[in-house]
Image 1: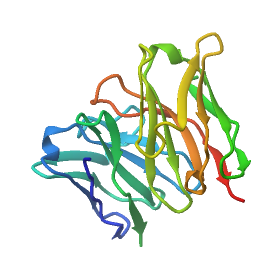
Image 2: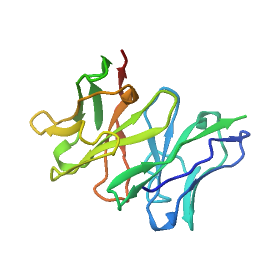
Image 3: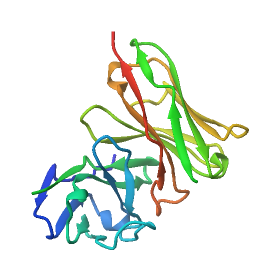
Image 4: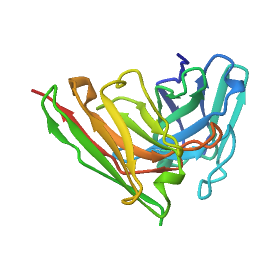
Length: 108
Length: 119
């Protein structure tokens, strides 16, 4: 089955840029989605189709996908961005959704 | 307003059964792909099951043969019938509006309902 690998944690100072990676075999051939989950809350879709933002998501959130790595970039990080972030792809071999293990973003 | 509300969670003994419900408003469950996703305590997200608009279903290997996803069009509600529960099924269960292609992800989520399996 397809495996997505994320770093367990990323730390960034307020106002700086955070980059969260999601590794997978030839992931560039897949459409990657990203979710933000604040403590005690349900996940929220922040990026879909590698780099598109749903309405209501700030432009500070962006995404890219190349080779074996997809990246979620959060510019001008704010305290409110502190959350767990998950990447997701559809594995057409098994017809299953696959989530990465999640990355905890800490704002210093 | 587009919304999903899950109910039905609780404390169950191993081997027991439970049915979760997910009431939708603002859109039709029958016209969309719908998924269940769970999150064990302190762990990440795990996809559980999907029902396509045409009624076809699919399951994660960890629940296949034990869980059944279904929907009631008249009630605009999604269900997850959980049988032969195991301790490792303990989790918060979320329903989500899914995409009918791999390109759009899950754009609407419920608040979750907690299932605890313990003797």
